Every structure is written in structure tokens, then in C-alpha cells.
Image (cartoon, rainbow, N blue to C red; front, side, top):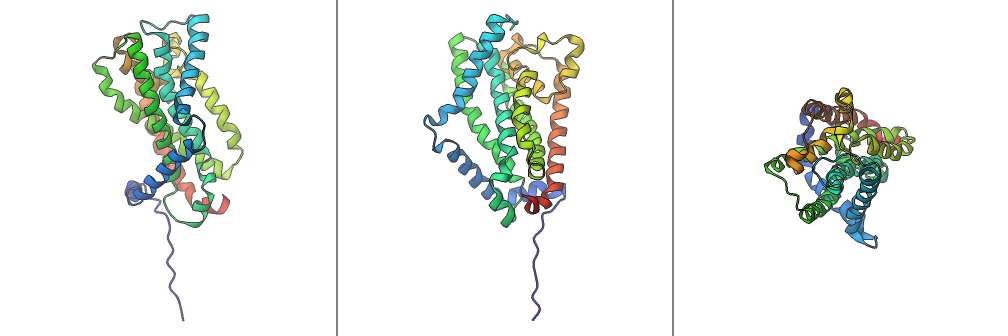
Length: 274
């Protein structure tokens, strides 16, 4: 007796991408909640880890760039200058790093069950977002301590956070897909994250970059994200280089779009090579 077989294949059309993600939203919620719990389950100080890293980095950068190198910070206290940049940078760095190994860490799911694989690196962003929200409370306390308050420009902060999410996911999709096929990328990820920290305006203001190099410097999408955060939180004390910011916005969207396309096109072979 002939049996009919049903073959489930992923829809590669970008047109149905968001529709498919919405259909699997319950799985997305479950994986996000699982990863958040696992991240702090067996740690001694729990969620304090999400605060300790940016705080220690802020102290180091403040001493090196603010006290020793005496780089300008405008009218902004140097700890606030650094911490307001450290938050979006750590959000990007965490998402990028966790995404790189996300598919490998969930090999049993990827090789045996069908679901949109792009959910897995996307969940990494949620974990980083929780860290960001916790650390943002510390930034608020720091601003109150220094008596430094933002103005109306803080209303654009959600858009800047959205821009950081696009940049993080775009880079995360690329590295997650590449790491499945080429395992050498797991050695490159820590280097890229560390190198990116020093070429992004985290420990210093973008104003120290010579004017003729500012637009080229903004090819790094995180430059626009970080400068935007400082501008939104510091008002007129941190003027923004609009040409570079607009370039970073365009590049962030392109990184996300082409990162998603690349992931979807290579998704079919994940179960075979993972």
C-alpha cells in the first residue's frame, strides 16, 4: 500500500518571514524565558553580573581616558559619557557573542524538529535586552548622583534602541550562519568583539576623531547608535554628527536585511552540517 509523505520545508520567501515567526511565537517566548533563567541559574551573584561588567569597564575607561589621557568630554561627567555608551555596546557585544554559538548549542532541536531556525539567534537579543534594562537602572542612578538630567530628546531613545537591535541581530544572523558551516569563526568572535570595543566611541567621545575622518568612521553602525544614545541622554552637551548618524542608520538597516537574507538562504543545510 502506497503511503503519502508530508515534507515540511521552510518558506524561503522574505514575504512570509514575519508571518512564520508570528506562528511560532510561543516557541520564541519559551526559548527566551529558558535562556534568561539559565543565564543566571548557577551564578553566585545572579543578575549582578549584568551590572558588574559595564560598571568595571566604565571605571577602567574613566581612569585611562578621562584621568590619564584627559580626553575631552564636553560638559558631561566622564563616567556618564562612558556608561551611556557602554550600555548599547554591551548589548551589541552580548547579542553578537551569544548568537555565534546559539545554533551549535541547540543542535538537537535544529537537527530533529522543524521551526524557523532564525528564532534561535533572535532569542539571544532578548537575553541581552534583559541585561540592558537592568544596567539602565544603574545609569539612571549615576545621572541622579551627578545631578545630570536629560531633556526632551530622551523620547527618541526607543528608536535608538530599535537601531541597536537591528545592528545586533544583523551581525548575529551573519555570524550564527557562518559558524555552523565554518567552526573557525568561534575563534574570531571574541577578537571581533574586543576589537570593536576599541574602534567604537565607548571610552571617548566621537569629537576626538578628526573632521575629515568622521564620515568614514561612521561606517561602523555602532558609532551612530552610541552617539545617538549620548545625544538623547545628554541633550545639547553631546552634539551629534548628523551625516555620520544617518549613514549608520542606513547601514544598520542594510546589515539586518542582508543578514536575515543570508541566514534564510543557508538555513536549509544547517541540519546536515551541524
